[in-house]
Image (cartoon, rainbow, N blue to C red):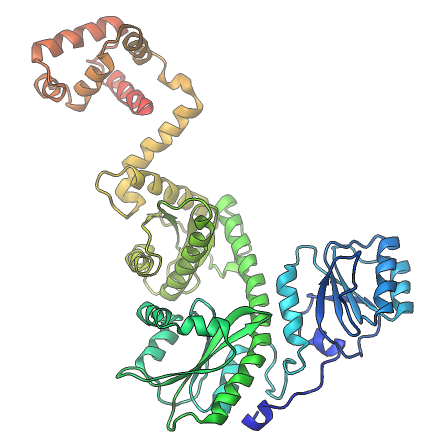
Length: 528
């Protein structure tokens, strides 16, 4: 593709050309002529399609395939020259409905019932703009971002990176041009460094990329070559950006024009890429959730090797409530995914309602504990919110992954009560605390575990306003040293001895029996 070709406006695509550029299975055609020019998609109420014009694709949100209603919608669409009607359903249309669509000359198409209408609209609108057919002179299959980056580098004249709205590097050109250190670090780390993101945010560059289709020139610095940058947008939505480093000569007007044209072409590629990535991410997230819950998984989805060491890491943001929680968890999930996958290839992560889990396989001798400090530093620099990180035990069987997950959850609970205010810990560092938490959970389910002498003391303290529970707790905590125990309660040792004799008389507990002392101490913990 040349810069001269980039300004040409090819004819609008036909419906069949548009469909060929979508991921297979996105839209299924059941009837109608697809060899017709397409105008643009319109979202319509099935009862009112008056906004649709000739050649439009009607996205019939809320419509069903009930024959009578749908037949009427198809006939009304034909009357306005609409080329296609799209319905979200898991059921195929009846033959009667297919015959109606065929006779009316309207393509009847379906999409999966859980379709994101806004995303489908953006994808179709970008594809139907005419200039943006999947192979509009580039020879690059839709969604192949690395080949697209190479094509843009040839068009504009410099090394290219294609990034998503979070500054994650999706693809980069593979030529042998000189690259500066910031570009090298972005490619190796799969995202733009935090301090550069902060600089672009403060200077308003990100705001420009999100709101304008015009390329912008960024001056160079001692470590950064000049950049020609443009936002990639579709239907008003920010999809990403293209960054082109200056090579052996400054960018001219033709380079600006070529990059603006490339941005329009890249929009379709990014929509196709995101559609595929979203599907893959959802499959991996579902597979990981199944693995964490039940210890069962299609190993091919997560690329797990038999006998491979696996560790579950749980990350929980602190002090996040209300509407902010969803956005914070999404951002946290992105940080965990990027950091863990960069450190240990094959890592997987999933965000739940309150925390993020990562499954870390052993890789190149790197264990989960080595990744956590790096993860904490990344979160501190980007999220600006405190988090707790619990690391479960290493397992070598897929069926044991839920155990590692349970241990990571228990570590989080133990950290929340930790007097040392640690931000992260491995299960072996807090094994005793987590065992007590599990016993406490058991007592919550079976209240009879606190029956016996201790319950008698509790009832006596409640009715008589005595303090025998505090006396027993101090005695056990001081390992039977009356002097130390009395000092902890600020009473005379003789007073403490009297209270100790009385609590034995009232409850019947034998403090010389090690088993009774152990049970009493556990029951006191259950009541705390």
